[in-house]
View 1 (cartoon, one colour):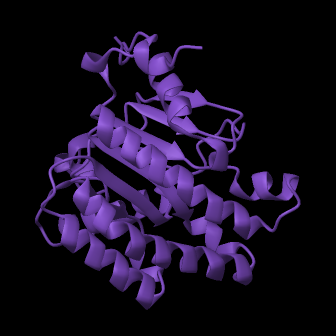
View 2 (spheres, rainbow, N blue to C red):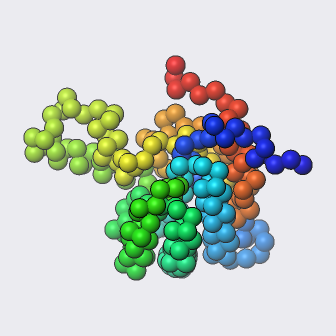
View 3 (tube, rainbow, N blue to C red):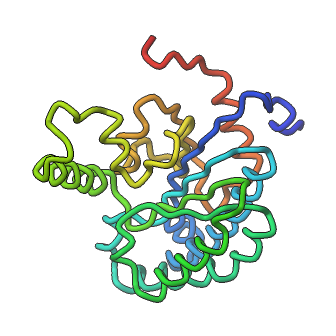
Length: 241
């Protein structure tokens, strides 16, 4: 069976792909394992999808790694997720550097444990001059938090006389979001069969194309990504026109 990579038009790749990496826990439980095992195996998918995106020329890849709602999960699972995060960032930094990948992060990073935040910032600093794929991790992130935070910033600036009410526009709001230096996603992928946004990039996905797949994240590999991109290229994007 031919690969979808042969069907993809390399001149019309989505500039920015965002992924809701769903199904780690379900995948593990279906196989009789603890949920944490699913998160551990999911790291393999993160590695392969990141490297594949870089290879084919995607400019931005945002992964929804940990939402603000995830803090309410059992403490043992949260602790395990943080440990996986720390270990993965530390181990993958040299590979990111070698592949010219720049790491970025969005979200309420102040809520991350000190050790995780330190290693995250160190990797961001070490890769910031890389010019290839920008890998953006959404950590302790939610759109409602982001939009509320942006609103507070703008209100404070209006109060201080930096802006007037009339200055408030779509562009001004966008420039106060954590994604202000990142283009809106062209394609959003959600794995594991759920068909909802789950508080992810609500402002930014106004004209994003959505792709839902039954495949759980630990089984999502390069061929799945190629198929999502191929399906994206079959659509006509009119942006409301």
